[in-house]
Image 1 (cartoon, rainbow, N blue to C red):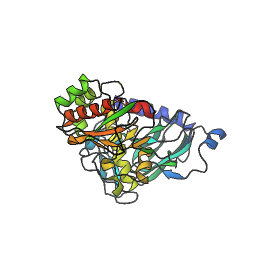
Image 2: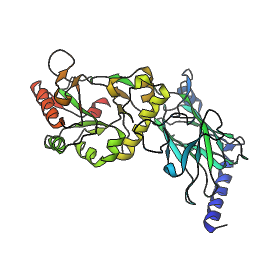
Image 3: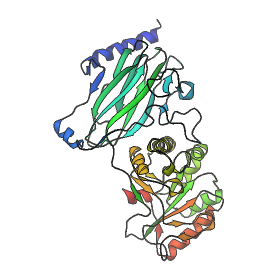
Image 4: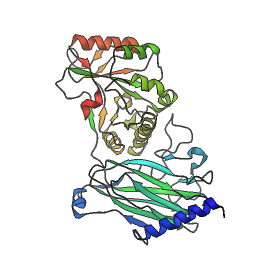
Length: 386
């Protein structure tokens, strides 16, 4: 046995001793659940599974990163983690992770939106040795549920937790242990009340003399548009797709450098969400959220549905991804247009949609002139939605 492995197994043994005081014999771990917290958890709210792609059955959207696992981020990427069809616990597939080296536990994670002061139960069926299931970011310390070995079959791990007063999302993780071989995961659940649905808006309720410039997609990034934004210090709310954002993140950082600017969520594949079930909508929104968070350091709180197509499932899927507002627009200045979808000129709180195209520099100029003529100034969108 190598010294490194011996040290890690010793650390695991110490963890086992510590966790024995907290983990019940069925490999469950309970967070603190005061009666007042349980009462605040919304006992009358429906209990649903909030995990994204819990059974690893949802296909990756078009334009998704090659080899990515819908709804999940795995530290080793496709070199370690893959959806397989060999002997799943249920359905047609499961996640199988093969740590690539001695320094990897093969961790896979996802962010789950939750309600504050609310009790949830996380669970998963696992197969392998020293497999762990846990949650962080609850606002309270919580030991993971784990198993030394499932004996070649499937075993359910369960952990219960109560969120703190400021917790609106948690980090759900599964992983194996150093040099303990591959493991499989299926039928993941985070059961409890869902966040309240996001709010749909086409404008921002305000009496301030401001409008909001939003720019979608990101396929055509011109120096002329970048220069115009910089020269006028325009606060821009960008809604890029993950592929162009990942191709040129420095560009989007530059064009959202002005105070009040931000990068928000626009799905992975630019699909018509109204044609998709809730679980696929959740993958589209959550995966785009994860990419924007990784690239730009801040989680989106606004979602722009492609084609302005959305339904009630969109509002819930967005909320399950931590999104507060589903935003369309009430004016379009893209590709040389100047369409205002209400009588008269621009009004306070109007949201203007444009696109990252070769006409954006002149589109911005025209939108700014329309705002000036109405006595309005561009402002930071997220600042007004808080």
